Length: 427
Image 1 (cartoon, helix red, strand yellow):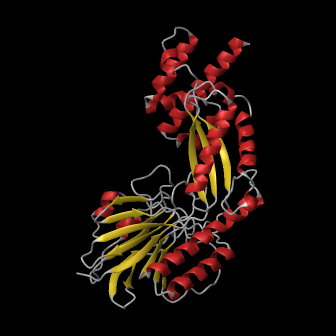
Image 2 (image 1 turned 120 degrees about the vertical axis):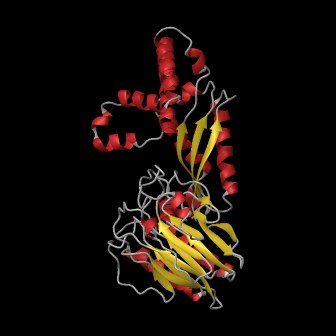
């Protein structure tokens, strides 16, 4: 039997992230985004103080770049001082974004902060605020930005503690959406003898297993439209019996959201405008006072489809949405439409068209067949994008796309082809 204790598990802070790639963003939005990772870090500090946690584990990528900005390092130092002043120990590993080899300022970390090195898996003792041994905490940092070794195999449990927590920045089971650094298998983690694997690297919140717990908390602040949903850290309470209770704390300062708006049943632009504005107001209400960047995804089949595929029409809608929703400078809880994706279809079903004889029917039949097979979808796109495949970086990006993404491209291509053919026939 052990002693009850509570810890915070956070990862992927990416402090001072530059938020690249945003176009036509007002300065007020850009400034808020640049500060958002630091605000989220302060949110972690607030959780530590409010919940009176015994210790904190930070599972890598505390900084966004190997050569950490001085601002990020000073802000982290201040946050660690705040955590330890409130009675919590802090255990840190570095990942692929902030490896040991990166340039670092010569700063003193507060007493009670333990940073794991990269030469071997070390073990530190974590204590309750009352001074009782709560757990052994194990970890290893990245020496450089690209680690191909299975670091999980180096973790060996040391007896003498009631609970054993392993801190690791890794890609479990080779998730293709993330760089395959420190690759390992879930089965290896489950059978290694540890009670909790505090993971980092994957920006989605995931619990891969319970007892032993294998957990990704995700990042603390979304950095692009690919990182929607709640962002923050887990508050983990461990009972005297070893039972684990996890509660997620959302600390993100700026939200990223995607909303879907269907064109089904719409015949007028005014109706589409009303529907999009209503969706954005729903986001504003659900954000509870926080700002949000929103992507509008138009879906469904209807008579508006052909009009939405006209050149530059999506950009025109986007510009007008930004005007209607109000300037970010006017309120703290602003909404900024990030983009509009047109994923609609015409009134004619592809299955019906595929029954036709001739070129169009054959084209659609080939496309439908490709959407049902990963091999066929890849072969069709390889053939269609042969010229692009000659560019190494483009080829690498295309090769990394999933079957679902390829299916989406093929369906869009079929819809667009049919629309263009109908326009040509009408002309």
